[in-house]
Length: 221
Image 1 (spheres, helix red, strand yellow):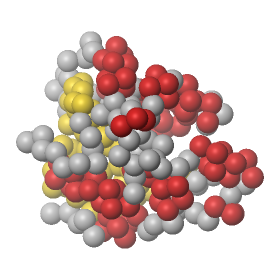
Image 2: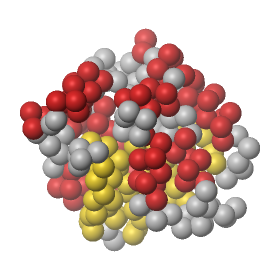
Image 3: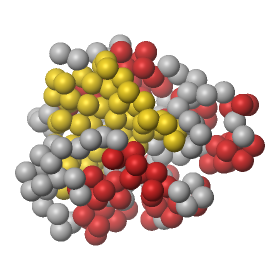
Image 4: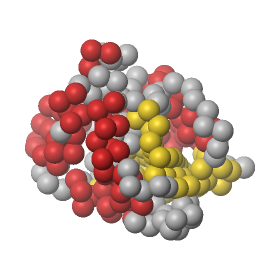
């Protein structure tokens, strides 16, 4: 994502300043009380990655997720990772640069792009909730365009819930760290929205007392 001074969406917290980008993994660990890394591993395990999959990681951040995915691939597999932060790019390349089948592209995911390729799986983790809703739909257009028919989309983000029903500690963390777009995101019916983009065969995996969800959807033929 772009730096704070360059933000397209002033209310967003997924467009990071340089300090937050440099310390992103540490911030996520603190916000999740040290549970983030193990939780991400479980979510990626649920993707059922095949050894020769081609995976598109949107809003890839520091490359932590790509490294976990990479463990499932053989040299014929490939991960294409996209983020628009030059700070994230630098960190990513330090972590993943030695892997020839992990590529980084500096590109906004909330604007139309064309990689002239289609993928077996598309993954997006804790990014899409941080956009205005019309921009989320633009991201979904990019997802659909770059998935093979029968390919799988994985959206790891907040699930749908009523904020006032959250335990006090979770509610405090959500209200303290999340932007106003996230409050809208949790009220949306994402299976219904994705159905409108010709996705089907949904499967859900829940974490953190069901307040976080990995939503799996298949691109229909």
